[in-house]
Structures are given as structure tokens and as C-alpha cells.
Length: 239
Ligand code: C5P
Image (tube, rainbow, N blue to C red; front, side, top):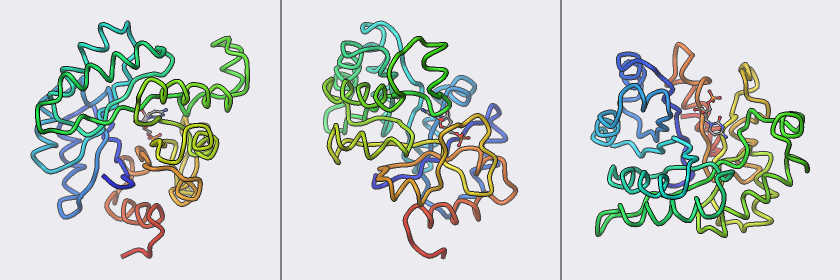
């Protein structure tokens, strides 16, 4: 997987999900399966997407006691997906337990799924951090210390806003993966995302991978928009 553009398959209906993917039959796309789709369709959707040749980021954002996360990660590793995640707010021991679980569940000869941590959701702003979560310190400093904690726990990277990538790379090194949602074209609605950038801006900021949801899932011609956004992401001319 090199600089993936994960399409967030945020659908609550198998028919709608299949109809959406039909647009991409001649395109090798990487996909993100989130809670909505996974809770609706279960492990069968993973099998179907793997059979169709997609790399899968299973975005279930685990956040529980270390033992539960460890055991759950064993189960997820057996699904042979490419990437999974946890909330860094679960703490270092939980993240270490997650890695151990993934390693234990990876079949011999197979690659362990990459594990990344959510630092702060891209829908969070500083006011929420202070007033609702009672976390002092700037959003940036919280994101950076969560990223460092994730690195110390042995994780491969973090989910974060593209705007935070330069700071995270400064603290954790350029090879620490950064996967960034909150991606929009200039003309798109932001929805509930507060910290948004375009694919080209994400590339310029140093994101390793991006996640695009509603900009693709709510348009009439997703293939065209995908090609446009992917070209913008890769910094190449539109084919
Ligand atoms: O529709 P949109 O492009 O905003 O979708 C972004 C996707 O990335 C959603 O599936 C959302 O759950 C996910 N995500 C996020 N922020 C994070 C982690 C995941 O928006 N910090």
C-alpha cells in the first residue's frame, strides 16, 4: 500500500454499497470499512471486499480495557485486512495490548495489519477539548503527545488532521504513518468536519494516506470525482 486514498464506504445498506462500488469496476481502489457498514453487514462484507481485491482499512476505533482490545485484535487479524485502529485515549497499555493481539492473530507467513491510533477526531475543536473533555493544552499539543504515546506503544502511525502532520512528523519521525480524513474539494460541504483540507494540501503537508467519504459517496458520478481527487492527491494530471 503506497500513499492510499481510502474511500470511506459509509453505507448502511448492502444494495447501496454494491451499487456505489459498481462505479469502480475498472479501478483498483482502497476502501475503509467503518462502524456503520461493519455493524450492518458484519464479517461477510470483509470477505466480499477482499475477494474483489481491495485493500481494507477496518476503522472500528477500538477503545476498551487492554484485555478486551487484545482479544478483539486477534479476531480482526484473522480477517487479513491491511489496517485497523484504536483510540490513543485508551492509553499506552491498551495500545500495546492491541499490537500484541494483532501479532498473535496474524497467520504464519502473513503480514500483521498496520495499527494506527486516533489522536483527536477531526470533528473536535479546541473549545470542545477544554469545555467538554476537560483537556487542557492546545489541540496541537494534545495530538502530538497522543501520537508520541502511540509511537512508544509500537504503533505504526496515527489518524489525524492533515494540518497536524508536520508537527507529528517532527515529534515521531517521517516514517510514522499519518492517515488523514477531513478531506474535501474546495467546492464541497464540510459537514461535521472542522479541520478540512484538499487532497493536494494533504500531500503538501506530508500525509501518508487520506480518507475520503461524503465527497465521493454523495455525488452522482463518484468515479469522475475519485479520479479528480486521486490526481490531486498524487500530484498528477487527470487521466
Ligand atoms: O465523509 P467524510 O469524508 O467526512 O468521512 C470521513 C471518514 O473518516 C468517516 O468514515 C469518519 O468516520 C472517518 N474518520 C474521521 N476522523 C477521524 C477518524 C476517522 O473523520 N479522526
